[in-house]
Image 1 (cartoon, rainbow, N blue to C red):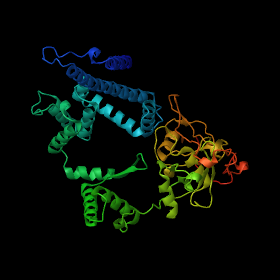
Image 2: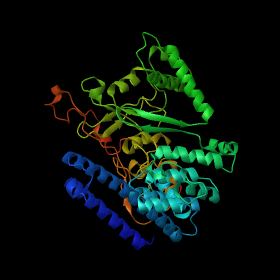
Image 3: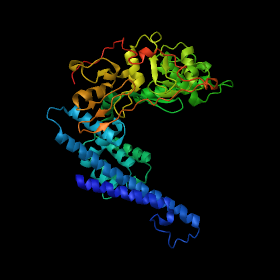
Image 4: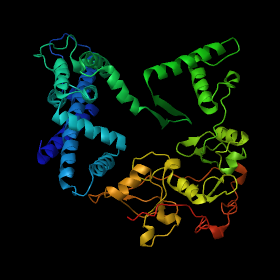
Length: 487
């Protein structure tokens, strides 16, 4: 699919989607779906219900066709960018630059963009039957991703055999029963994985040895002061952890225990990770973390005058009761931050309660919240201080000339042609891609803190306990080792 054809296809799909949406808003009578002629169904509500279901079926087909256009566009851009790349650019740096650009254009994470590019490459080069079914709308994007995933690391002949088994009715041994596109994607994955294991040319021992290198622990913030922590481990270790937490939870069951098994498993796992043993879980209390975490608490909330939430670095809002507990437990993670009652921006960083980290890095963590690259969620504790204007070119070590990119985007800046923009004391730098497109950085969304009702008549300036002389550069007397490499 050429560039012009791809654009026209995308425009046609968008027009179809707009027409379908307009028709749906106007009711099923004008939705462009065939009425149930001759079906004997005379109930108007029944006809309307069937019309809505038909419209949903059309949107499913349309979504698949949109995904097919995206696949062609992603693969086309990757090929064009490769042709435009300088011969001095390493393959890894070029790949990082392409992934970053696609992520910014689609407003998705780089992991999602990288997956799209890899899947698009596989579909356009090795899985023609899958791409054809996706284009026709008979196979969803979820099904296509399953096919890519289950044929990964297979030899070309094995991948073609798996694809043909499920999508080619003329294959030597075609899939029996429900067509792949009519299965729930998770059930299709189950069937595809069974077929893959039975016909894989490489022994499971060798594949397991290779996969062990991919083990990892992942963290994902969620709402209401909660987060997900998941681990990708060898099956025996994962099963052992599950069995131990289950056995320990069952041992705690009794007439005086009001926690469910699910809750106790989570408490036991958290206690084991934080303390090394399950002591204290029986009392129903998980200890406070001692890891290095930045907690910002409005002073009125800390004193109990308001119920405004606190902020946990790398996560977001947490209940103030959680922040108070961290302080009461003497957690070394707690760090006092004064904020401006007028707009909620940080004004001063305490120096005595958090001596391990330098004040400039603390200020960067407050200003940026995370790696400032668009879409990146790497937590600030893992990031590297970097001069926006290189030290060798006259750059200073002031907050307005510093950023804290994660190691990946720090490398992208120096090898991938990406350039950080300007920063201020309270705003992280934006980024300019090799194609010249500009992308803004995310920044904390400060809000004026809540004040108790009896403070309503007091001007905010009176309530601001800050040394005004320090506002221009509140941390200029601290120096942090930073990156001095040339731009």
